[in-house]
Each structure stands twice: as structure tokens, then as C-alpha cells.
Image 1: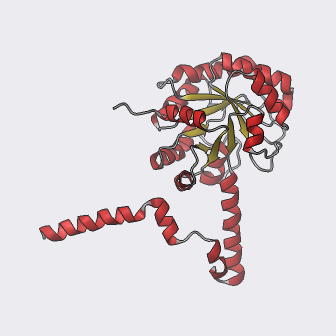
Image 2: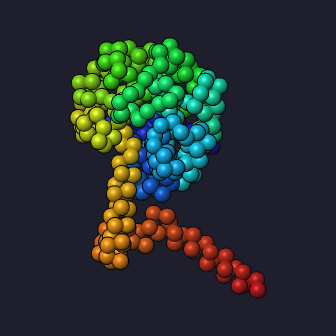
Image 3: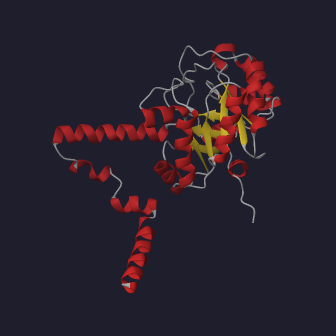
Amino acid sequence: MKTVSAGSRFREALSRENPLQIVGTPNAYTALLAQDCGFQALYLSGAGVANVSFGLPDLAMTTLSDVLDDARRITGATPLPLLVDIDTGWGHAFTIGRAVKEMIRAGVAAVHLEDQIQAKRCGHRPGKHVVETAEMADRIKAAVDARTDSHFVIMARSDALAIEGLEATVARCQAYVEAGADMIFLEGAKSLDDYRTAAKAVKAPLLANMTEFGVTPLFTTQELAEAGVKMALYPLSAFRAMSQAALKVFHTLREQGTQKSLLPEMQTREELYKILDYHRYEEVLDQLDQGKNHHD
């Protein structure tokens, strides 16, 4: 029986849910939590890798290997399809091609590649610069040519909206689809009309980034669906909440000398074990111990 590829699972999820909610999971355990809540697709953010795994800002300081390590942990923990942020591809055409091959080998379902210059910045910060459309088209072609699985998703992200305006950005996105991009990530939109215009003009599924505290309003899935958006991304929502919760715990411990007051806000040991399927592992250990005692 042929195994369904991760890319195929991503495309199937897209056909089942409109818009497909793609939730950021910075590590394997949060991926299991998302799976338990019924999400159909996961996301590994470049900012997430930098922030969570390295304590660094999102300024192109992590490598392909860094991102692969976190991606492998997630794909090893859950069969849910994983979309991975590969920034600008870490270099020229050969490097982009290697990144795509390695992501497929790691069980990743999709990647998005952006049109910023190599020294990229967060998509919701000022001072961004984008490459020429032709250079980005070459990046996409390199990624598409490197695919060893035709179902693996190559998504093109454009950061041009804040720099060049909507009309020029839509033209870029059209060129990216012509170059072979399967889907489009329109970064930094400020209105539903931006999405509506792009969705009508671009012949590929469109992703909206619902990141908090950025330039894009936090639209509902219904609003996005009505605007023609096919994917809603929540890249760091859980991480922001987790970080705030951790700060509260640390402050409370310092101020009160105990965490007793926070117990109602904590996941219990049994809840943790349920997500990890801990008791199944224990049963296997018990069977092994019984077998060992029987032979003794």
C-alpha cells in the first residue's frame, strides 16, 4: 500500500476546510496539543525557530539545519501536514534546491519562500526590501525543479505590499504562480479588500497571516472565506500565550515563594500524560518487566 505523502495530506486538508486554519507549533509538544484540538495543518515559523530554539530575533540568523531540526521533531510526533517558513531559501538556486529536498526528506508538507532580500526582516516591521520579480521567479523555479514529490507544496510569499502597493504586488504574485508557485502568501495586508482583490486576480490559493500585534487586523475565518482567502495562518499565537504564562509563573514564584495560587491555571500531570499517551508506554514497560521476571 502506497504511503500518502505529506504534501498530499496538506492539499487534502485544504480541500476539506475553508479557510484551512494553520496553527503555529514551535515544538513537538505544542504540535500534539494542536492535533488534540482538531487542527488539520501545522506551521513552523522562522521567527519561532529563532525566538524559541535560539533566543534570537527574526533577522535571518538561523540556518537550514536549525530549521530542519525543529521540523523533524514535529513531523516525528504527528502525521499532520507541516508548512515550514524557509525565509529566502538561505542562498542561491542550489541552496534553495537543497532546502526543498531536505524538507521533503524530513517529512515536511509545504514550504513558503519569500521575495525579501537575503538580509530579511520580520514581515510586520519597517525597513523591508524586496528583490526584483525576476529574481524571485528564479527562486521559485529552483524550488519547483528540486521537488522529489510533485505534491509537495511550494508557496510564494510576497512582502512587497508595504513597499510597492497592491497593484504591483498582485502582479508579482501572478508572476510567481507563472513561475510554478502552488500557493500565495500575501504578507502585510491591511484590509479584506486587499485579500479580495488578490484572490480574484491570482489563480492560486491565497494565505492570510493572522499574526498578532502586526499591521494586519485579526479577521475571522468567516470574513477571510468571504474575501476568497483559502488559508488562515496563526504563526506565533500559542507561543505568545505560553510566554506570557511562563512570565506569570516566574514572577509569582519570586514574589510569593510558591506556585500554589497558579495550580488552577496549570495543565495537570494526567492531562499531560493523555496528550503524550504516557500510559500506553507504561503498559509496554510492564509487559517487558513481566516477561523478564517470567524468564528469570
